[in-house]
Structure formats: C-alpha cells, structure tokens
Length: 302
Image (cartoon, one colour):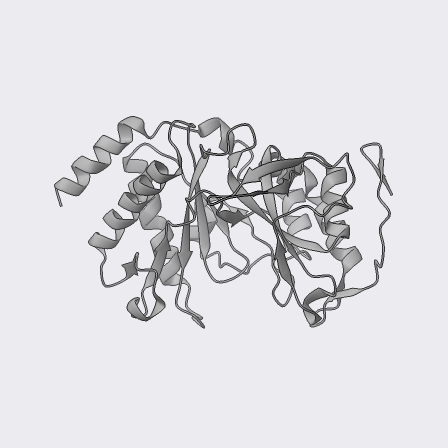
C-alpha cells in the first residue's frame, strides 16, 4: 500500500483483533484510513503513547511510549525528557502514512500528549475525564456531570469540546493558549472541578481513591500533568465491539448519547453524514490568565 509517497507493507490483515465481533486487523486499518482526515489534525505536532495489541484482544496488550529502533526514519519522533532522568522518543503522527504504519504495528489506540512538540512544558488544552463508578449501566449521572462542567466553562467564557470515551465516561477538552506550564494549568482545572463538586457534593468527587468516591462520578483533572496522555479523538478502544472515542456535539449529549454508541462499524457512516464536531476546536483556544481570577472570585463567593 502506497500512502503519502511511502510504501506501507500491511501484514496479517485477516488476523482477528476483536474475537467477539470478528473485526480483523484489516478492519481496524481500514477504519483509521477512513477517519484519517478527522483524526490527523489532533495528532499532528503532538507526541503519542502507543497502546499495542499484537495478537488482538485475545492476547496481551501493552503501552509503548518509546518508538522502537526498527521504526522507519521517515516516521517523526520527539525526544521526550522524563521528569526524573533520561528520555524516550515518542512517535509523532504527521501523516496518513504514519498512521497506517503504526496501526500495522498493532497500535490499536493512540493516546495524545497534551502539549505540542515545539514546547513540551506548555499544554495547548486542558482535559476533564468523567469517570463513573465501575459496572454502572446508568449514564444519566455522567451526562449531567458533563453538562455541569460545560456550564461552568461557559461562565468563564471558555468552550469545552466533548467526546465519548468508547468506555464508560466522557472526556471534555478545552483548547487554551500556551501561557502556563502544566502545574498551573492543572491547578486551574482542579479549581473548575472543585467548583462543580462543591455545588453537587452528593453526585461528584475529585477524590482519586476509589474507596472514597462512594458511588459518585469522579471528575479527574490529574491528566493535566506533564507526561500524562488522553485518548485521541476517533481512536479505537480495546473493548468488545471495537468502540471508538467519538467527538460529539452538546446537543447529542443532551439527547442521551452514551459513551459506547459508536464503533469502527458505524463511525465512518456517521462522519459521511455529519460535520466533524471538533473540526474548528483549535481556533477557539483562549487565555486562562484573566479567567483564573474570575474563577477565584467564584470560589470565594461560595
């Protein structure tokens, strides 16, 4: 297969990656190629962490931060310093060819670093991960949490962009100007999460330890840390049925979209009929400098 001038030798297309549904490695590659124009704007100029399943879901999966030596020279990488010492070379998906190559290497799910490769210390977005209690089958609560966070963001004149996770919850991405390093951005995200939970203490929590959540929705702001990642939009998830992380609009959330509504089977058809809800997200990056003071004032008034 020749893509973007690169010869990609696709191997084992018929290998079953999702035993329950029969989806093969070839199906996964075809899916990623069909949504490449949608996913690439989010992957470009960001390093990724690779979640790999060489034998599909029937085998063992693993996370791989460091691009192996056998990756081709044309596939861009970025040296990513570790917080303690040393570094690793994270892949950077700048093209459809790079995406196809990585999926052929059994990268089922790319996880996105939150800063761009030209300045790894300054994130260009902040993320809220809404995590319901395990084994929940009722999504109204996590939907309400997403809408409550959206309302606070709007009060701060910030815009949140939501995606289903393909698992149990939602992720909200907020594009921001690159003014602050991760610690300060995480503190801002923490204050937003705290404001929401303080209004609804019986429903939401920011406590990490599961035994302290008492059945409440966990609003996870800890992803806003150097070296942390968030699942890329349109990425395939390693769960039965091959669900995908699906960007949606807020109307769909209100109309009862659930975190596992879309898969590699129905997402291409959705994208053929609907504009990408995240298409212009980057244009809405805003400063949190002045909004930090407004948020502080809101917290003081509680």
